[in-house]
Amino acid sequence: MKNQQNRTLGAFEKTFWLLDQIDSKDFVLAAEIDGTEAVQAWRQAIDMVQLRHPNLSVKIVIDQFSRPVLEHVDDMTIPLRVLNVKDDYRWEQEVEKELATRFNTAEGPLLRAVLIQKPETTILVLAAHHAVADGTSISYLFRDILTAVTGRELQPMAPQQSNDETLGLPEDLAIAGSDKTASLQNEFKKVAPKVSSIRLNKEISRRLIEKAREEGTTVHGAICAAVLFATRTKRATWSDRKIELISPICARKPLRLDDNYGLNITTHAVYFEGEQQKTFWEVAREAKAGLAGTDTEQHVKNYINFFRDITFNSADIQKMIDILKNAFNHEIMVTNLGKVKYETNFGKLKLKAVYGPMVRSGKGQEQTIGAISTNDSLSLTNTSDNPIEGLLEAVVQTLTSACAINQELAV
Image (cartoon, rainbow, N blue to C red; front, side):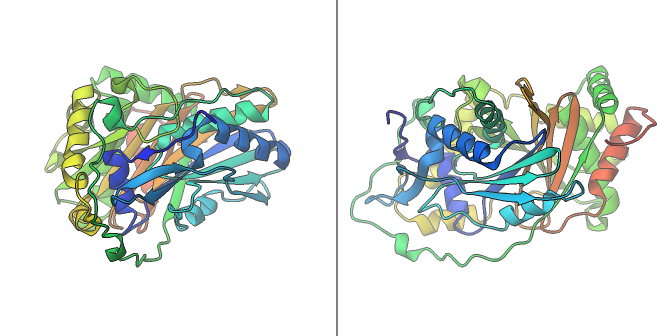
């Protein structure tokens, strides 16, 4: 095979691998599909997609210079669990199971699939390791799997470079004679994250886009503001504290990347304090302004260089982990994939909605809001070890009030 992936990890890939040594860095997306297909057809489609994307056939191992590297594995099979259930089955519980189940990065594969078959619909759940993928990657996998399951061919893609390599930065240095991997302490705590979801109807989703534009902000800014207002109201200890809100930013456009399966994001924090005295749309504009300049190549380069300073050119892996233990102390993450960017009709199957990303993103108290729009309807999820009860409903109520909408909240 010409598209085998074998290389050292880039700086942010290595950061996720290091963080995974102390806590799970896995994430999940779910696709709701109108229509059904035989299990064998789904199995074959996943196998075809695996041949297309080199990062789906790798493990992460330590080389002789104490560097984590991606290593291709022949005949690697992506696990597929199958459930036959009734219409009222709660698919979120399968996401919770996947988020509580760690990947063995040293063996791979670094993707798992769950096929939930209802009488007339299908839920496809994909769980991935963050060192080799991001939410947009999974969104494109849904497209590729649905393309393959309906009988169309997929062309193999070339191995994806790390963002470091794309930016012309050198790989992690080889340091001979200093293997310190034996010092790693892999005592993983058990986790039991909870996941909830809600989907806005088309009218609310359309009005939210229009109103955000009228107010000089974005849908992402509005979602951030709604989450801030809702969490401050529903969690008393957050009512007047300084809040750190993290937003992942897709790096594909500034780096001119294709839709290959890989890790192509940065993250950016915006801090909020005293915004309770401002109007909803003032806060939404602040959320947008706080992300200014993050969709540029220079921002990606600065971000990568920050993590290169921490994680590159050293063999002391435990020291790197100890430094990173203090990272990601945010209260809120809003991870917004925007609008699904491909046709959702696949013959007898139609992609109705995508949910996620669903991920444990911090120390346990944080609320991780996933957002993605499919077929003109916005889906929201909340993932947390300690979820705020009714948070998504409060977020939607805040959005509808801000948009002056008085109708059913979700479909």
